[in-house]
Length: 266
Image 1 (cartoon, rainbow, N blue to C red):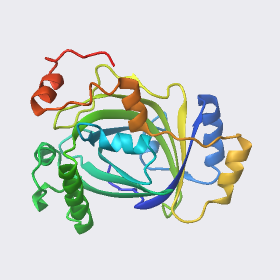
Image 2 (cartoon, one colour):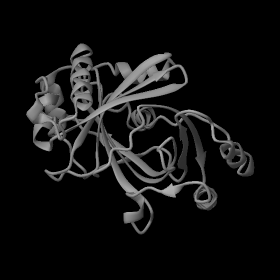
Image 3 (cartoon, rainbow, N blue to C red):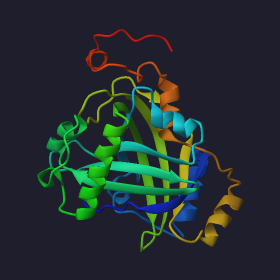
Image 4 (tube, rainbow, N blue to C red):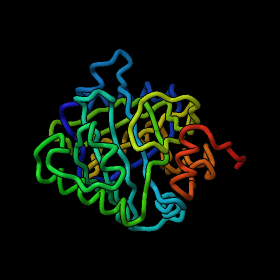
């Protein structure tokens, strides 16, 4: 993943649709946007996306979302591979009223455990030399320390993405969203006992930075779409249950992570 297409500020509209509708939406969207460079590399037009979400012992960021707090954030690591030459993006995703704002910076794979264990980032930990990225990772670590966040949940899905020439408009369709607890201070791509949140539905997201494209209205009307919430982190916590993620001490967390602690019913 060489190009970072993250939009620092944008609006997002989410819809749950069937696979049959998704194939029709694909044809509609291709009249307005181009398939992004990562989707074109795969026969099914979708590439794998992995996220490791961090939260406090009592799942502070989860409950802020559930309660609808206006100014809230999530802390997550976004990655596409565990290859040593592939970056891991430390990402802060904020919601300010109806606007989504993001900060993120790419970190070297080898530095991930160090930073997750509380070390402050240094230039040699970074995947790139961008000052903006370095500041983002610094801020991530500050927030992580403030709420004493630690790894909680690994989420995976397949993403089909379309974008315009200047990245101001983006449409994505996410399939097979699944998750499982990950309390380790490192990233992984394999899953052993995943829980599915939306299957067989597809999450359609319409994203824009400035003006709402007029053809978005046509898309919603033609396919009779109903806007809804589709927070992958929250739905995954609900699918798994709170108990496996609300680990109260580092010792208990480590025992659970290596399978020595029996899972309790939710």
